[in-house]
Length: 134
Length: 134
DNA sequence: CTCCGTGCAAATACTTTGCAAAGCG
DNA sequence: CGCTTTGCAAAGTATTTGCACGGAG
Image (cartoon, rainbow over all chains, first blue to last red; front, side, top):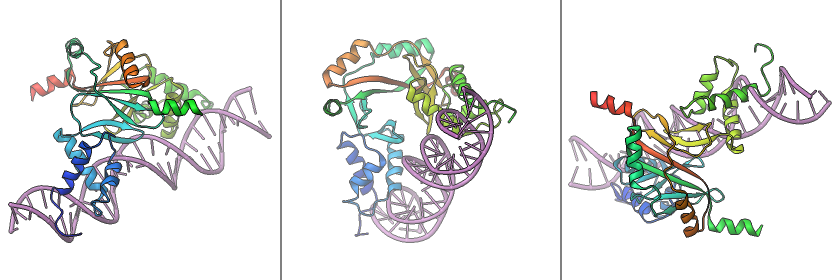
């Protein structure tokens, strides 16, 4: 490899790209996106770091969509929309579950709720247009 | 095999067990549960039928949890709670997302929303007790 | 005979892991 | 030097698929 680009350089890059995109990438996507700048990057490293980020809470998993896990560098509370046509994952920042509803469920079932994953499925604007054209 | 238990018998059994349990099983679980009664059942058949059920809408996927897809024979609208300790998946029948909220999001983003997957993560009553004991 | 459903095993797809080499302080 | 991070390739796990056979109409 070139010279001295080890240590956290790659890790930072992985984290950076996660925070700098809104596409909710897969490990593969991150790998491909970083390869030009880090030609010797390995997919295993991407997986390892993504896992680490999730465990430490710096990154959040959107869930497994079409067999691949998608990640999100934005850990603030928000929901997602998955287009069943193109597979795109989009953000929904409007709150959808009232706080008191969660508290109520915790009380009724005696659950301790830590996080919530809200996923809407349907057709995104672009794909609605495309379908209309065909 | 015994004699004449082919055709849709196994398919019915798979569907039946999905509707008759509340554990939100994986393919593997269904396979194990049915093996005593259908010793020649194959895992591939379970996967094939689960997929078919999901496509036809008779069964719903709860999502991939700990690397395995979980299914639900109850397709009425409800949410789920996943215990991060034991992995259990429990039902929440209280509505959590107000209808009008969904309509509002559809309008604002121009999405066409077909389904929603609501997943809460946390600790179930049993595991809270177990953790308290340790 | 034809079609559908199946068992079995091979093939995929995604992700994890062991190990030795290399970076940083 | 000791600890961390990585590349690489092998291993692992979950799921899908090809093919030939068996049962139903």
